[in-house]
Length: 220
Image (cartoon, rainbow, N blue to C red; front, side, top):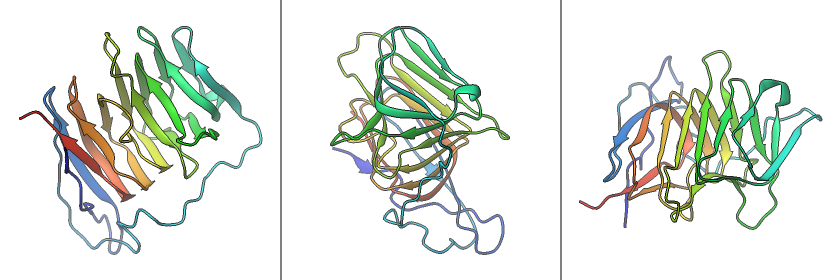
């Protein structure tokens, strides 16, 4: 079950020929929602989630991460960029905080590469001058949740760049509970799924370029 909530890409032109879209949405515990409006002409190639994918990381020095976080963890600018070599598991009661300016990229080589499996919380809040960058290296999905978790599980991403990903929240990602705001989502090849969330879902003030959108399902 589910209906495409962002089937068409919204475009908001800040100048002639610019192809950026702004979308807004909010959902309560029974589901999610989305709306957007824009003006101007979409730029070349916009709406094509199959565009060539290029990762932006060039540095040779990375902090490699993966596996289960044993305690609350902070990823800092000093350790950036972080290369996820195996899925990062955030257990119940554990928080992963990602600070402004940090870059996270996928180095996961599994059949269905995933950066984060969340039973606790992830807080990734960038700034206008120092956005957080999530790069799926053209193959990885970003977040999934444990449906069997008895505690609160939530992902907050704001003022970030989400790029070159398979999906923000894939079909196999369990029940989605997240906030995505004030961010740029670009080159995301597959639909993200917001099905029967257990907590508020917020999707607002984002720019979407060549992004496959969200499918939203609810009980009503």
